[in-house]
Image (tube, rainbow over all chains, first blue to last red; front, side, top):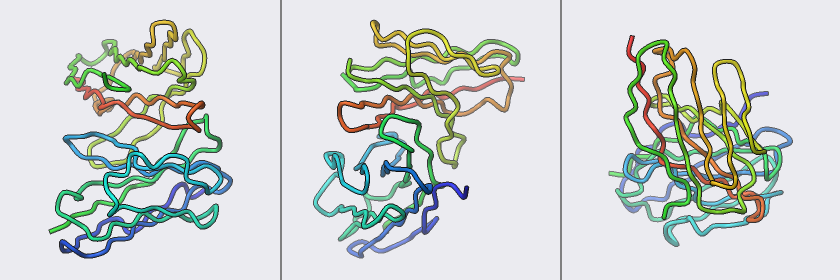
Length: 113
Length: 112
C-alpha cells in the first residue's frame, strides 16, 4: 500500500493568499484526521471525518480554515486568507476504523510570508 | 488540565539502559491508546497500540495501561542511539466518534 499521500510537501505563499492542502488516505480506511504541528502547540487536531462525514471541527482555529472530504479517497484543507501565524506542518492521517491506530502522511510544511 | 499530558523532557539515558516514558489522560471514556515515535523533520510513526489494562510487549518495547489511574507508559529496553526521538502518546475516544488526541511529546536522547 502506498500509505497516506499528502501534497504539496512544501508550500510558500504570501499573506492573504488561498492555500489548499490535499490528502489521499489509505485505501479502505474509514477515518481521516487533519493535524497541525508547531513547536509551541505540538500536534493539534483540527478536524476529523468518519465515512467522509465531518465529526468534530472544534479544533479548526478560525473561519478561515475549512475542510472537505468529497469521497473516500480524497480530502482537502483550505486556508483563506492565509496569515503568517498559519505557518506550521500540516499532517493528514487515516485509520481503518474510528478506534484503531492512525497512519500519517509525510506532511505539508506551510510557510506564509 | 490538558487532555493528554506527558513530561516534555528531554529524557537522557545511556545506551543499553531502560527508558521509561509516561502519559496521563483526563477522559475516562478513552478506549484506545497509542505510542508514536517522531524523528526531527519526519512524520509520527506508530510503534505500539494498547487497548486493555496490563502490559503489551513487542520486541524491546513494552506498553503498560492502567485505566483506573488513567495512565499509560512505554518502556524501551536496551536503548540505542537510534531510539533518540520524540515520543508521542495518543488517546482515542470512541464515545466521541474516534477523536484522536496527542500529548506534547517527550524528547528522548540516548547517549552512546
